[in-house]
Length: 626
Image 1 (cartoon, rainbow, N blue to C red):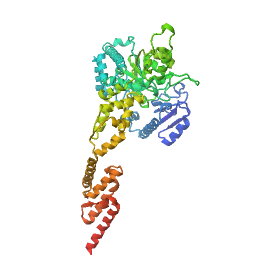
Image 2: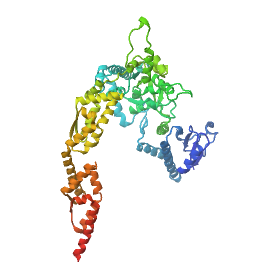
Image 3: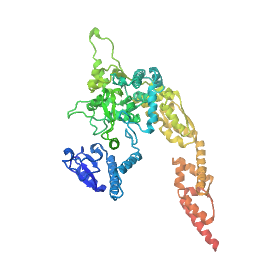
Image 4: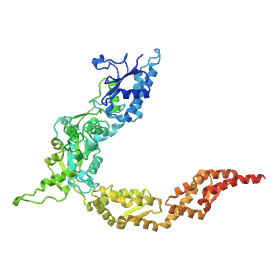
């Protein structure tokens, strides 16, 4: 009888059998896998455990390999999933192998079908998804469901006819100022996709050398660097990936590998490698990976990451089969079994445009020290700029190298542009004219509660002035707006206020402004609370077929409790009448009553009064029998 063998690559663990329980396997796994670099093979067919002499001394007989993965790259969740899949395979194989010889059945076919079902149910998203077919070039193709989206992206590239000023005008709708950055980005994007369109029309152009206009954006935080790229990605609608440089490491043991950027780009292209090779990769916080001299060895998260990014920006072939992708490796082996050839899924990064950005605070200080050395005598020409961000405009390649970048790395970023710091007037313009501004967001938030929110120009000026003090650019607007309107968004949805206007006094003293607004709407608030009492009685009748009639004194007390205890009427009802329906239904069963008057005494002590009603309902039938 054929058996299932588990072979540890170090040779320290060999398990064979048709079914091994999870607890036993987990213990043996821990005892037999001391090395984090070890791999595990599952082999389906063979006459016995593999020997070191078999298969050229590699310890693996000519059998069918189901999967292989490296423990060092798997999180605990992936290991648990792997255990679960192994158990399912073993149980299925044990059942299939126990069938008689008169009922021949190939267990491999059953396993392949079950495994494909597992992939579909898990909604796995490898670059070549289950059921996908490689294209004629041997690269991963997109699934049928993504054909339409991929075709649409290709159509937009082939029909790309935007001019740099068109892109600039679009960005002006969302980002205030930064005219130079918009100009540089617009020219680079147009040049890039004109080149892409020509390559699609004439494939021979792909092999020609093309100097990419990779860009580095410099500038203080909150000036719109990331927002510019987000708007561009929305406009062009082609493969685009945004990532943070701080999550990468040189080796990938901890964090991500830089090649994952290219794989993410392929995913955004629906698995179409031919489309992804013309995409855009945007990396934020690039200044955080600037290397620094260390006393204990190499900086694996700084200079090492730069070297790996350098390879991507220059030209390299990236395999879309990641060593850490368990499902992807399993799918590759299934493809190998179907076609007899391993799938070739590679993206060449020659035509991928790279755009990076960062605040580069320490770089401004270095440039300031360099240019602030005043010449002596008549050679002095002009005074250096005063604002710190303006020193970034004077940065040279030598400054970037001293900052901690490799010369080859910064040399692959030939286009450099500095974003200007925002002034209070710029922040006011953002709130008034920018689409999707923070002010528009707050209007939408209040409208969700049926509240019409307006703000005066004086209040906007005060918010902008306070936001400048935060020194976080446009992000300071969110900080100030949240501080000012925090209690407004908390209190007003539960009140009768349906509109209010914020003025400069609201910004300077929001607590007093809120109290004044609530006092102004006090009568409307009481009427609203009374209406909630009637609404509670209506819902109670619909759910339990019992009428609750609240007296005026009871309604006034409920309104008073809601006001003094700072609780909503829904909470008051839940506390006072949580189990009321059970007692009332018992009373109704004994007496036939379906209408009950709720007085002030019942609101003050609902449990006591309800108990008294229940006792009286049992005494009345006894009196009637006598």
